[in-house]
Length: 161
Image (cartoon, rainbow, N blue to C red; front, side, top):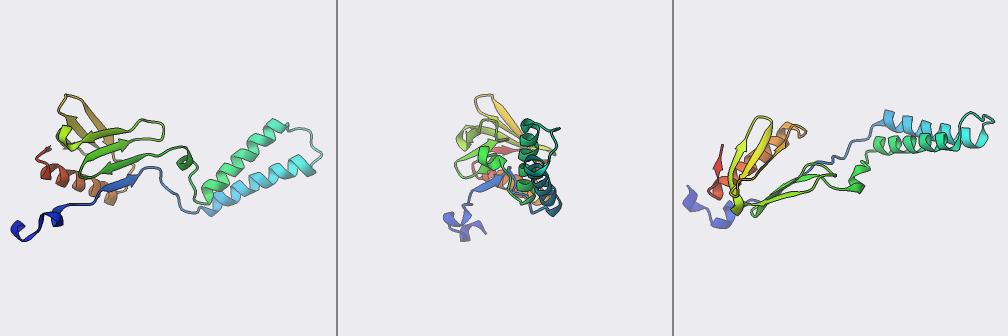
């Protein structure tokens, strides 16, 4: 069956999974954030109350603004950095969080790929290894990631466990 396919037909496109998820619109969070912003503006401008300092009001305003932005479906952490898993014909690249450093491993340097229940472990030929959890991914995305890793590793004659 394989003889009927051309070599280009067997190549797969790369897989990119963004770990900084865009949230859907949450109207309750949006309304709560706007209420916090509105209350802060009212207390700062129209209220005669001297109980709150400008520091208190600033913190309350920023928290309300952040909450409203989250409720609108935008994740402000995406402005700070990226977190991703990328699998292509050349390498595996994993950046677990926006604060961590990316780990890149070319397929030439990989000795073994282990697909465990909760994590994927990659052993390198120089003796080093790294692993990453896929528990934060939904089931379909985790299945696609494991399948892509297994197929690409097999095509490169790398052991998969």
